[in-house]
Length: 290
Length: 290
Ligand SMILES: NC(=O)C1=CN([C@@H]2O[C@H](COP(=O)(O)OP(=O)(O)OC[C@H]3O[C@@H](n4cnc5c(N)ncnc54)[C@H](OP(=O)(O)O)[C@@H]3O)[C@@H](O)[C@H]2O)C=CC1
Ligand SMILES: NC(=O)C1=CN([C@@H]2O[C@H](COP(=O)(O)OP(=O)(O)OC[C@H]3O[C@@H](n4cnc5c(N)ncnc54)[C@H](OP(=O)(O)O)[C@@H]3O)[C@@H](O)[C@H]2O)C=CC1
Image (cartoon, rainbow over all chains, first blue to last red; front, side, top):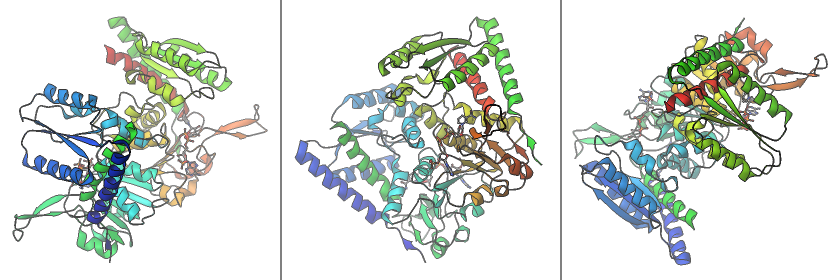
């Protein structure tokens, strides 16, 4: 029976470490990290995400600059806002909440964020620097970095171990695979064209699922004692739940728990880590300017 | 018994295709691709490489601009040469022959090459764009791209197949893994910390070895019918050879040939493809400016 990796507790610990360092820096040189959050339009889910990021900033002593643009803002207006933030020395990290309204080219907006302020780590150059083992990215994407932190703080050895990452998106799967490779795991990347995925998963000491399919990974696929990191956030109908749905991961928690040694629950696993790492990255951005 | 993948013949075919297209473009708009080759110092091996690149350019109708700097050129002088080439509209590709003399920071010289002229595909941003599946790099590194071309032209299906790449360098192993992943193979990346590498290789339908260890991969490691791409170029002492040594790959050719379905010999496999792809990339660079 697996033990749970308590992402909520580990994320709180990471935030408290950031808070301490922020306070010490403020004391020492009078500066605080500044995060700009660009929100375009009125999407309820985006507003919710932004709120939780701001809450974490408040907790850590990171100063938030809210940049709100109307849903009909033009691409040029959004870009102008980013340009201004690039030039503002009090802003150390810039976060553009996705998705942007239809008709706005997300890539070209994101590309504009200066690489030193790309606390999301989405810039291709940051992905490239991560992929090249003897180079150092400015930032690595928050979610996979959070997964690495969970492994580290749960005492999971990666060196020489076999890891399987399911999913190959540019913001989760691929950087996750690169981080594990850089940590000396032997990594296999699976995706929708992978055949007999169960037998590939069975080779792994560490399984990371970032697919977006509820309960996809089954306990019977796992090697006995594998560590399971479940990135997925899926909502499934549940008439017994107050909201009519509940959240579940990409792994079938109940069957996986029987075989794994450690597993992240959903919610309360990877989710809280993403924002905690965003706090870390923003602090790092400030430290680089000192 | 495996059939040989004839890299020499395939590379000649690629060059002849480039030659044809270059001639047609010249006819149509009066322009030829221009490749600048920057050679610093007098290393014999570097001079040899540069000579074979120039020979291929001549064959294809690509105009070569030789930039020779003395072995004691300063980093700033080398950088000035690169800057000039960046600004020269007749130059479509820039190649800085490595290694640069001791004391010169190679990374900071290479970083200066504008991404549109980075025909070697070494720029981190090109690696990052390759790693992110829905993005397009300007160029991909010549050697791994050449390996993909060998697979394609030998009728090797990648989609849904298992591939193992041994080696994780930024110029061969990692971009190779990304290219195979983008071609829908399920890729595993091995390196010096991988345990029981033979059993990992046994899972693969396609094995790419880019390690730099003579005859490392043994036939008994292979799955029956696997395709073997041997990137390695190693020289081993051979008193019977005229020069006192001979070249061999990272795979033990004789034992691998017994088990594989197709295999690249060394020399005459991957080697000639690297330069052929350099020709292709330089042509692509010109086409982008039209
Ligand atoms: N905890 C957090 O903070 C975060 C959670 N997430 C969650 O993580 C999950 C993945 O996110 P993201 O990477 O952005 O998603 P994407 O949709 O961008 O990528 C999904 C990946 O899963 C692969 N995939 C889809 N179906 C299958 C299948 N049947 N078998 C094998 N592979 C499959 C796809 O393969 P192919 O490439 O072949 O299409 C693709 O590579 C989502 O549930 C998302 O909500 C994401 C970000 C942050
Ligand atoms: N045909 C051509 O045109 C070209 C050929 N080459 C040849 O390809 C080979 C690789 O080149 P390159 O990528 O630049 O080399 P690097 O030395 O940069 O990388 C070698 C890789 O092999 C891994 N490795 C070393 N020893 C072992 C081992 N015992 N078991 C498993 N993995 C091991 C290393 O692992 P780790 O990261 O853990 O150290 C490293 O990732 C060389 O022989 C080179 O001459 C290269 C470029 C062009």
